[in-house]
Image 1 (cartoon, rainbow, N blue to C red):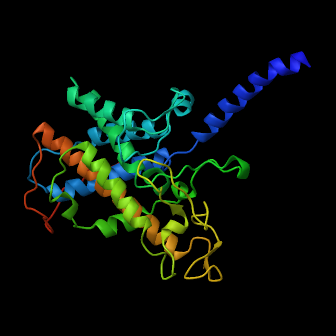
Image 2 (image 1 turned 45 degrees about the horizontal axis):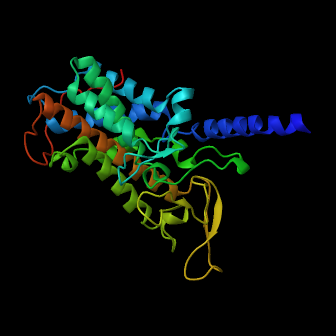
Image 3 (image 1 turned 90 degrees about the horizontal axis):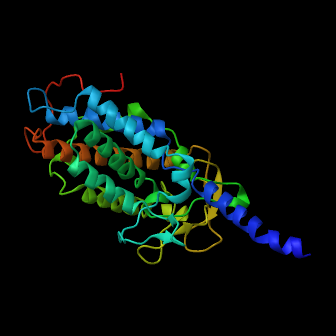
Length: 312
């Protein structure tokens, strides 16, 4: 009996470690998706800055940013153990659990901004920008931007299903087309880009689910107070899957979404477009700080373009 009582704290500690590890297995978008969103943003920025304009990001620079972006998203085991990738709109200095686990990425984001501003080499500046952009893209995912804590160990679910919804690159590019309106007003700071992207996610979740009498809060319910965690709504963590949930004026009214319902596709596309636009804004801010960029015309549309930087 004495031996068993002494061993119990060890088992409790081990269980806590396993739980923390599992909690950090999930990311907002896969590393490959982070890269593709970055390439798409670079193409759009190139189109909007126009040929014959000031110097832009080179293909090698775009690749360096994308690689750093993916590396931040695909952080190692020990990093995921102590830093959870959730947004905090209050940007508090202390988001730790028992002074060990950072529940939000606020401190790391600030560190990356400082590193970018103080970088003594182009290589280090691009690496820091890639990390910043990774977090900007992260908050376009509802579970990260609101935020809603994703892991549900009792259901063997460790991530939010929205984050695994496929990118539709051709549709994203078609929607972007020659629209440069998101670049007409340059951002004030990287913190502003992040906050704007998170606020846009919050507004999107308040929008209607297709033609159903429900909003996306049926999937992700925002926190009651700023800085807290929200929760999953009656539809649960089922984005992209067949699901039934009460909606409308009474609980007797049931809404149904089928697997890969058009409502899912439309919502995911808007979030992915938001990620591309916010990424382009962060890149524009970087170029302006470097003294390279100015739009030829505010809200420029049309015209021939050079081949933009891409993944090739």
